[in-house]
Length: 411
Image (cartoon, rainbow, N blue to C red):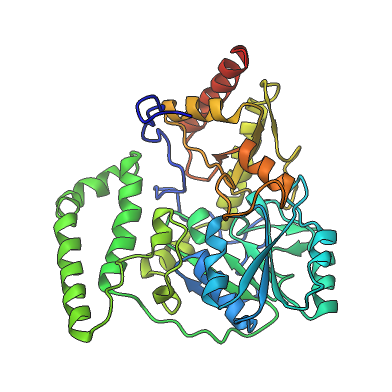
């Protein structure tokens, strides 16, 4: 175990971890090479994917005494929405490629209390959910299709989001926005009324998205023009919060944060955001962005990184090939010495995600050995559309260098 003095010092990521605004972020055609989660669906644009999960479960009538089945390989943010509905959560096993283990799911239906199942397309690789759909139909169980990693895509001609009763997405993972998610359904009308949040939220959503772009050298002219407002941003937030606190005190109610905590990588679920729509800024970015460009660049970047790591020691891609119908969220790599490699990358300022490294308390290898192994060994790297040629080349070199250096050191 590392002490507080010998932990590797993390550097600020040298390249953007998520999509950021740039001059070529918009335009380039509306037609996508792959279906979108929003195509042909009733849509509600909310502030996060976890809010959408809560709304989907509520629409399915999930309540006290019910059980929601969730993959044992998961983000902890998936659990609080079920608790918000009053339900318990049970975990089902996944296969080594992250597909749902149907035999384990069926074995967990004996109690008769399972009201809904959440199935996830991990890392943007669509699964064949037809067998799970049939299982749900036989038992009268609702299916929530978790497309947080798969905003675009299809499997065997079936678009993502079309198999579940409801599907959820995370626009923050695919578009250069600070907040955003969606609840969609191709099978049901959405009886969900949303309203706008505060002016402070609207300003924060826009300014934080712009600041992320400025931090990585994008939009330099706009950065100069907004230099003064950005310098005054701290004072602005304090003034907005003070007004909110004053109003909340007068009304005897708690003061809501300017933005949902999901935008800052927490796992919390704040029900005060369940009736709020995504910001005007984020909705405008979605309208102006080119699905064609997003899909093409993400697929290209994924393939480039896979080629760059071909033959690198001590690793293998989670998926041997990128399916034709996939638009990846990130590039998932299984690493033999994950801790050493992650520390080396952290020191170099390489952005990465250890998805599943933190699971809900009690979920371990005894619940699902594959989930525990994925959480321990998998490191995912950005392949989003905003990466420049120089940034991709730097990322490829740093990852390969870390893998080779760690392989050369005796275990």
